[in-house]
Length: 289
Figure (cartoon, rainbow, N blue to C red):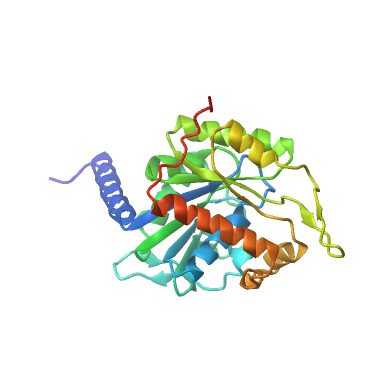
């Protein structure tokens, strides 16, 4: 007796759920990089975190689930293509470094400038395919870059990857911090652990005297982290060379160990390693006091 269409659909869903579970079992740490608003450098933090972890010898997967405005391929200057997988119908992600694989919707689109006009259920299905139908290597870290806000993409990640931990990116000014609080509340509602916060664009080093200029405001990220009982993993200075590097699609600036930005990022990676390797439970975002 032939299966009815609804039964076939349910069987495909069950099979996909099994494949997702098996794939996630082979990934040690999953980190969702999110922000309450755009323009805070979230994708750059996700890309550079992946590169620096890979350069420390970890096996890293970078999954870009910003389906409407993927930035990861541009930040990394990604040139590779998806490769046929070992199993029929599966694909392997783009190889960026020997221990860094990348997946973005742009790798599937012929026209890089085409608009992605999708509703929620379709977007959720694509994200699940990024896990089930992509043959990632066994990973120490999967870094997930989501679009700004608390919409379909981060919700799908929270539901599909229940042990993912959030890394929330902000800048010091109040308008960014107000949106960050929405991200914190989102994590509380979906029961996602919060690894910590990263304050980006935290002061500009004067190219002449080296003095730090507070372009936006001082210690906004630290005050918010303390108020919300969260880890402030670190602060990243605003450096024009880093911005230019991102626009040009290369990460050579991360190779300069004397650069303040690189040193600050190294400390952030140290803190992430410490929290995860020590088996400490990240803060849940509960209110202090």
